[in-house]
Amino acid sequence: MDPRAHRTMIAQVQVERQRLLPEHEDATQTTIDMLRTSTGRDDPASVPYLNLAYLLGVKNTYGDDKLMALALSVANWATTAINDLAHHTGRTPQQIIDHYETDIIADRESPT
Image (cartoon, rainbow, N blue to C red; front, top):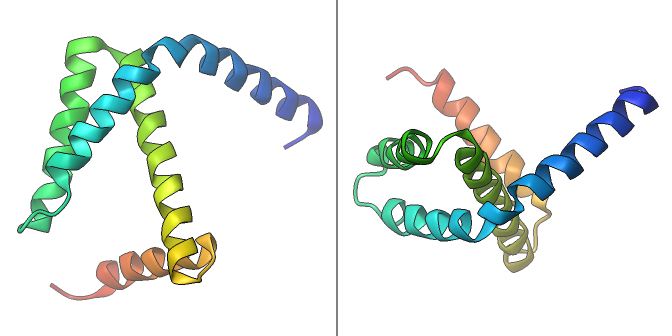
């Protein structure tokens, strides 16, 4: 990315972050609720459906801004969880991501 485009993107990110900041508290609570519902399931295949139901519920009820705030919250939680897992397992965050990426690739390639 050229320096001008990079500066433009950084400026846009700062503006959007400030604009979405009032949604932060609700987005965090929704993330917690969504994760409590989706984690520890006996049927892991249901997780994408449960998460999608949460996302569609937010989008349909509150609109794109709250959906964007929720997406940002979930991304922040995922980043923190990966960093914590790396710390507790003695691996780097990149090794954790590589592990999951390898699993996803293997799932894609396995005949079912």
